[in-house]
Image (cartoon, rainbow, N blue to C red; front, side, top):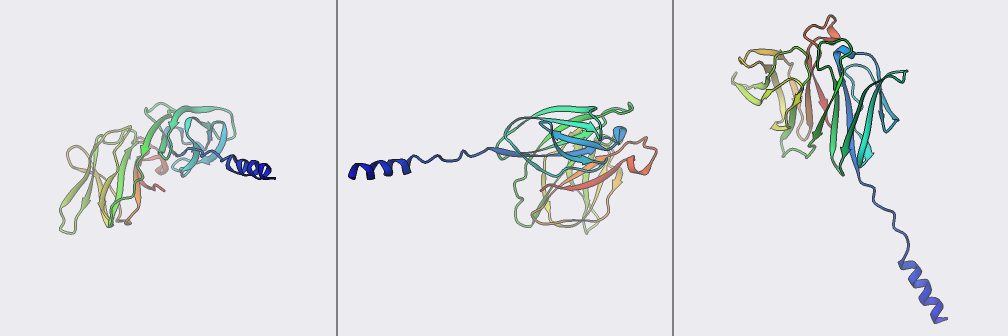
Length: 224
């Protein structure tokens, strides 16, 4: 009887423990004005979300490792982006589909790692992603202070690139993007940058866009 009890005890100690699955997150943004059709986003051939031009998927949790992302013309098997990314444990990424040239149906991937570390107390974080085809390049982000002076927040973001996130004071902010001569090229309405929040200011569209929806503009994406 004593032997039987001992064996039961050993069995309890050797119970299987479920492995911890390492995961990261990815969001996809449709910012390609020259391919501004509805698209379907797939990760490892699994549907994520359909996007109209200007929309994003939000962050999708995926297992760590090399993940293959496809962007297909919605309702078809026509793949316009096929791009791999190594997703690391607890890391976050954005895949921007944008138009690098004036060519019809121009579309290409831009991968950016997203540092979503929370900002300090009373601060927000913001970055600029410049995908405005034919727009001024580089551009710099300024905030107009209550004194009327301009404070440089993020300098010299060239077309097809993203800045790092920068901490700024939270609160209502009058922001604008200026060209290399410090002339404003995109003036934004007052934006409340909430404490603790993280934002992407996305410049998208085309300088030769024939309709308002594909002309150059700047949108805020809240990274969450």
